[in-house]
Amino acid sequence: MLVFFLFQGFGDPSRLVMGQSGDSTTQANIRKELYLINEKGDKISKFKQFLFYLNDVSPVCVHSKQDIQKKQLKGIFIGGENKFGLKIPYLRKSYQTKRDVWNILVQALPGTLILAIAAMFIAILIGIPLGVVAAVKQNTWVDTSAIFSSIVGISAPSFFMGIIIAYAFGFVLSSWTGLHISVSWYDIDDVTGQKRLSLQNLILPAVTLGIRPLAIITQLTRSAMLDVLDQDYIRTAYAKGLNKRKVIWKHGLRNALNPVITAVTGWFAELLAGAFFVEYIFGWQGMGKVTVDALEKLDYPVVMGSVLVAATFFILINILADILYGIVDPRVRVE
Image 1 (tube, rainbow, N blue to C red):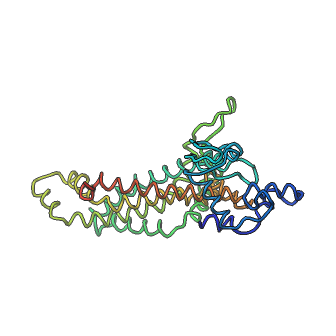
Image 2 (spheres, rainbow, N blue to C red; image 1 turned 90 degrees about the vertical axis):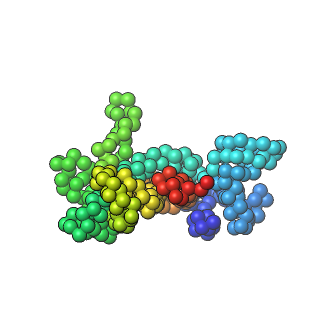
């Protein structure tokens, strides 16, 4: 509802589609396609426009045979003239390119997924061990350094760090690092024209995007480990003669992972939706850059589709977090 009334509920989108030029007949046809007026030319209320939009983006839908053919909907449909169906959500067409928004986002999604996974991998790979070591070495210089670094990481917005890192390592020190400010997740072969994954281009944006989750994961792991290391079963494990490393990494860490899982899954969902500025700064070909470009051109269907896809990822990843709780900690399993 918010997405629709924020972007589509006001103004006349037909003007954005046809631009400054265009006759009244063209504008009327566009308004019919966008459900702004009916076949008789009468204006359709905002509430009905919203219902039409909901029917388009919903997997469960009712569409006429003409609409199915015109919009090239993909799914399973049954019935007569008006068919009940289960379909791939129809996010409508871009005002600027006239391409299906779904196709635009599917083409951009791999770039955002690769960037978010790489950033979270860096955050987990460094953050969890650093948090464990800081807890074990409490009140030493290692602990103090870890806390200070995590506070700096949390305090630094991604768009600010992106500018600093891009300028320092992608411009000033580019001859030493071999990295560049403007990058993409693929290189194009000069002979075949095929796309090839470029891990070198992934380094700067992934590090930039991974700084804040790394800092939070470090703090959460440290805090959770300090609570766990004071428990009776840890002292019992030491009393039985178990190796310190085994006690900390197998028994202690596993019981401290619940808040870390919450942070990891929550931040992964946020990285998918919040990589917009990082992608724009580095020229990374993903949903973020596509969305920012669409905002500049007032291409609202692309923006609306991007927001809905990001919201869907939030829901799916939170469901995944609940499943992981039961795998990691048997105490929260539902029998």
